[in-house]
Image: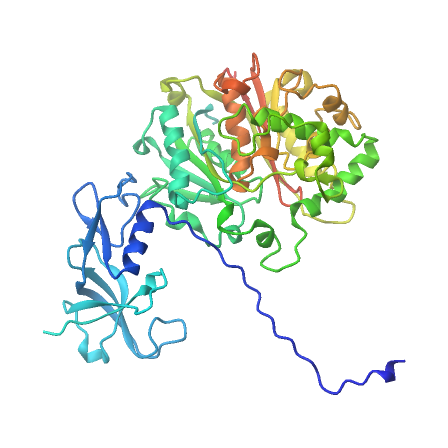
Length: 153
Length: 382
């Protein structure tokens, strides 16, 4: 009968449901991520000779296919705009205060959003020179570019 | 005031289980470039873009039309996303054509796609939970109900599978090509969801389809014969409600009647020369023949049995090999319209039906609750 079953303590089973998607990157983003894993940033040469970073498959103005003329860029760069993150959450790229910035890598004509690890807000300014810092154990993700840090003069 | 509207360019990718050589953007662009080449147009000639795909959970990219804007040539142009589950490719073309018919735009690019290899559709359909029954599991009871109501023999499903797989062998873009398929092989393949056996089910495909719709001026400039649109309709109903007849959904009946009325069709079986119907599981061929009043009640399976829906029959259905042979879900509805267009244009190649003047395209989605249909002809509307 029911009374035969004595529950001493509630049993809790924790499960984690997840489904990993796989992404095929194609010839342009594929080349970008392969090089990033090796600590090299790549841009792509557009029809108007500008170097776009990160590289795009199709021209953002005309939609033309840009081909695959990849151009090495960085590791230096210039901060073009920034905002300070004083209280990072778990989803932020760094666990201490940092700046989200538009950084134009040397050799590129456009800027990309990245974290700038400058320690304190007073250390960041538009036009400051920064250098790419890569993850020591690359994962093939955009976060392999861990952050930009102030260039030591 | 209604403008005349025609399909002047279509493009498909070669559908495969896995296209790991291209990005999603590159996949769409393959279909788009083929459609532009067919119409001898460039992206500069396009006034607006309508893009369609099935649930975002399939690839795990939310609102993919945003990041695809460059690839589909939509920069600084109106870009609209359509989502009506499996019927979306059809609905996308209908929405694009409506922009032309109403005179809002002159030439519209429509494109629909799925890259199933990047995710898991069955998992996506279950809303991100495990234990989903999948599309086959959802549809199987309605097929059993159809069989019970119509008295159809079990080999009808096998016949549809054999026909579509053999037709696909003539279609360079089709995914599954099985020219040597036999009734015996279908019959002996594993039962997945009674009554659906393995060879009576669609594959999971990567691929895209694009179609360019334009007004009368655009059609006059077209280098190849246009496929003129004589009727377009979309209808939907709830996936479940008391009294619903899922074997013959009312939305499907009304969608068909609407599109026939627009095209002046009173006897679809004799006035339509061929049809591309959305048949992901074999039994849906006779079910849609009846569900769209092409055949009377209990008569759909007899059209299959007598060979009427064969490539050389009186009412060929899915000469392309259909969804049964190729299913990049979001693209599949548009492929029905694209293949119907190629038939009236006389450009279908090895699976061309002789002398097609009027073709029917149909797509359905969700729990057999969303419908998109079109009637295409080789001559413009009156």
